[in-house]
Length: 279
Ligand code: GLU
Image: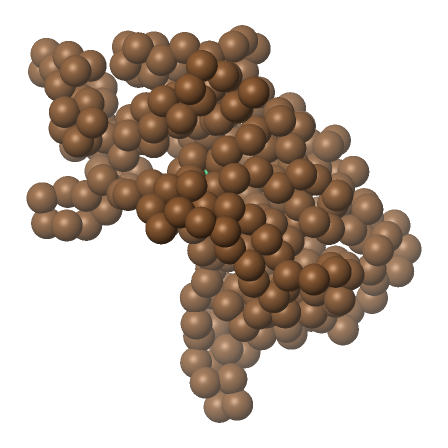
């Protein structure tokens, strides 16, 4: 049975891009199950009011999903268990670098300047030599040692894309080091990170196809690597086109002008929203 999900963070209003993503995921469930998941690991920016409005806007659009809805803030023990496993396998190291430290290290002459990947600035590995013994460190960011992780995987990373440019994908795990850099799997004060939480919860909820925007496609090799390291099943990935504003920029949280709530207030119907996003 097909299981898809829409996984917004309750840090602002849903805009047309979210509507398109949710409608696409709902349609892709094809009589199976469409799930709503609240990705609220960022406790500073997540607000109950935004969460309430997400439910309200999605219902208004005509979507339905099983209750109760999974909230990532309730899943910290599961993330911790995965971190403990990766830590015991010697694949994590504590990292005390802030953005400025990383920028400085990446700007050293031999590094050739900062580069960016799906986990932000590509980390030059400054803390890779730090102590990895003892119990899982608390309240300190933990990074995945990609070079070592790649040696634990037999063969290439494989998955299937079902959206644009559909087809099988295959990539050698070693290439992630250059394209992504050692990613943070546990952020300070969060006990997890987007990449870790999303992979664990997709597996926990039995998601068979991850539907999301093309902007997240470059994180997929990392997600497949984590699935393989943690012994989780690898779903299909459907990366869809992005909804852009009149100037061609893709919509982001700051685009409150395109919030679904505002269109609703102006009298738009759910059918109008579907038309606006090209459905
Ligand atoms: N919470 C993520 C976002 O709002 C969802 C990412 C995903 O679907 O994997 O961008």
